[in-house]
Image 1 (cartoon, rainbow, N blue to C red):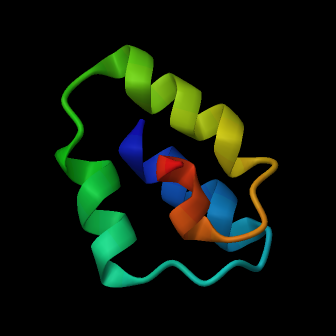
Image 2 (cartoon, rainbow, N blue to C red; image 1 turned 45 degrees about the vertical axis):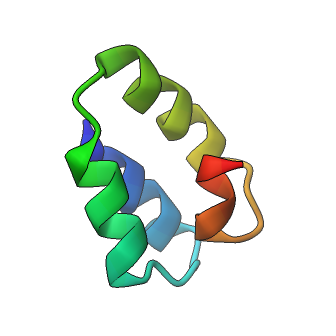
Length: 51
């Protein structure tokens, strides 16, 4: 699911720095990743996933 979070951000034309990619990839909890996937569809900056 982590790859999907990054893919949505990129598809929306947002910059995805390495640190954001790492934080998403390191998340072990599916429920957290699910929430980040939903947020990826609406955030204005990729770093806002973690706000």
